[in-house]
Length: 130
Ligand code: 5GP
Image (tube, rainbow, N blue to C red; front, side, top):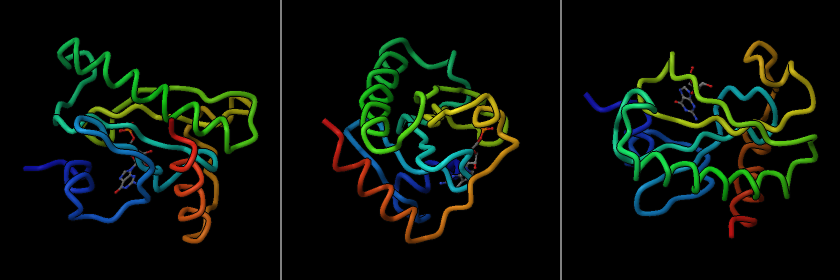
């Protein structure tokens, strides 16, 4: 069965899209640690990041870097942190999280974001992708 992220990539489930190319897709996390928290996903559906072939792994990192730079340009923060967990959704994804403190990286503190804010954040980050 297709993962929830494959359904998002295919447009079967809505998302706040940030970026897409032939092999990768980025969208805002629906339950963000901080405003701008974004997920970067390979279109190829693989559960664990270390099981990706090297080319897809390196491509995912390059794509995440590009999206992370755009987040940095939009969200005032100390830095954008990268985190890979995958215990909830078995489809590789890199979390890009604007960090000001360790609490932002903890996945315990969550930001309240309205639909309007999600829409505006996604558009602002997308506009900064180079
Ligand atoms: P992990 O698998 O790394 O533990 O976390 C999965 C992440 O995906 C969580 O941060 C969660 O909020 C996010 N997530 C789960 N389902 C959806 C969804 O349907 N849409 C979006 N945008 N994010 C999701």
